[in-house]
Length: 249
Image (cartoon, rainbow, N blue to C red; front, side, top):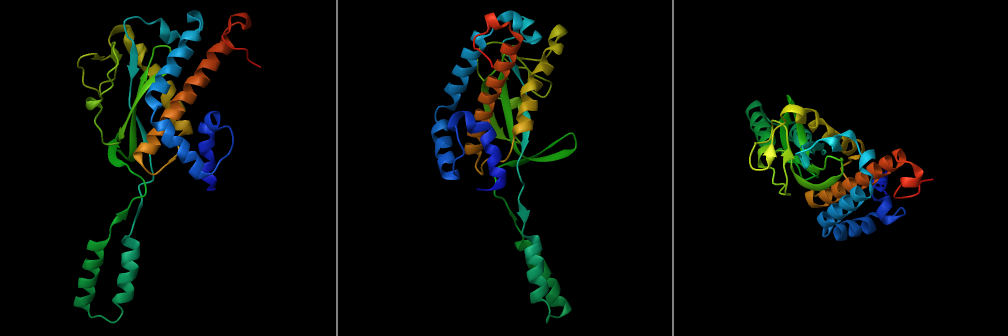
């Protein structure tokens, strides 16, 4: 098994329970992908309901907003250009050619060079930096549990976000203010940064787990479920032992 692939098990160990081969793991991912949305929503709702309100994060004290929404870019390997291969071939082919023929051979090699991509992603630019990969839109409750996700290619505009759960959704200026999507005003401007808790977790554990967007999306849902479990346990540790929903070691 590829050494980097073992990092996948950080996320899926709760589901699989042991180290497994790639075929077994991806078979599990295919089955998980079919129920990912309902599973994430049900687990998040159940875990949040088990927490005592007084021990929730301070973000839960804000009223009037049901959801926090943001976007996070996830990098994927952009692929290697075949230009180096074509230039090497050009140098070999042009050994016995004249100057004009060498120039023609160089132009042909340049035109035939293509970038070979292994991972499904798109290019975008943010704050003068180029990214190749995916973009994740999480739907986070004020208690900081992730209840939903939308996964798109990196060049997908924030203004086109389609998260459709009922209730006001607090978004930053990159999103279009429409319907239930609202920009921070008044005390709400102090609430929006809380969504970064999930973004930090996502960046810490993200790896290019799969080549296709569909499979990577399934892994991102696993990460969201794992985040909810970790967040739930952190709340339980702040709760007095006699009031906890679960017993901790």
